[in-house]
Image (cartoon, rainbow, N blue to C red; front, side):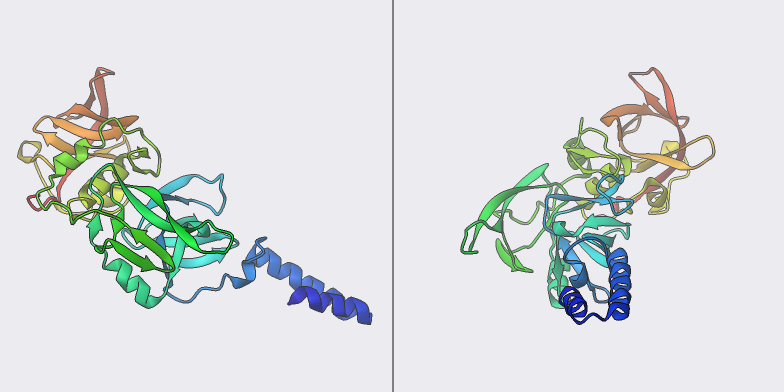
Length: 307
């Protein structure tokens, strides 16, 4: 709309109005970004979207080179807070975490569609699950389905065939076994590499590890260790800790910087370099490879509800 107007003003020779429109146009481009679709990036209040890729990186700033602070998994929803070119500032509906996401990695939802997606209860409990999603591959615009691997913690519809926001999703997963155990889920991550902001077996951080493991047994944790330490109930003495409790560690200033899952009275599974097992006692975390204590014990929290 703006560019035909510019041509008209050039043709009619109204230089003053032409300069004014140029200035306004430049301001709009700066505010809305350099994408050709910037003018269609309007959002309504409380607009939600669901993740349509296996794991979408959420970044600190609206740039590909910005650090990853979180990941949103397939089927999880986000609230779109604002647009900046093709970047969306989002708030994860699962844990309230905020950051910037490439808008090509989600599908916008109507309010009715958002209610349907939020009702999805099938959580992937294996390291990966294969599903199929529709994709436009033909010249005539008709679509076919293509396979996709989604990670543990991803959320799927209960129905084996579902279409939402124009995307067809097919899977053969049955509702999860209600007897799935917390420790069994934790061991599926053993030796997964450390990745700041990660939440999948291809890379995850300490609190991403605990969050996804607990998610697969139906317990919602916040994203960061400093947030998780405020959940559940405190276990006052190390001797009273039980398998499945969360063990938190602090730095020299008392800030919570690390978390793991107690898997026996004296061992912990945690992500430090990789998901690993080390010794733990009331003093702290003892790294078996380094032969020394690396983290000071700060708190023990019970959020398992017997699971």
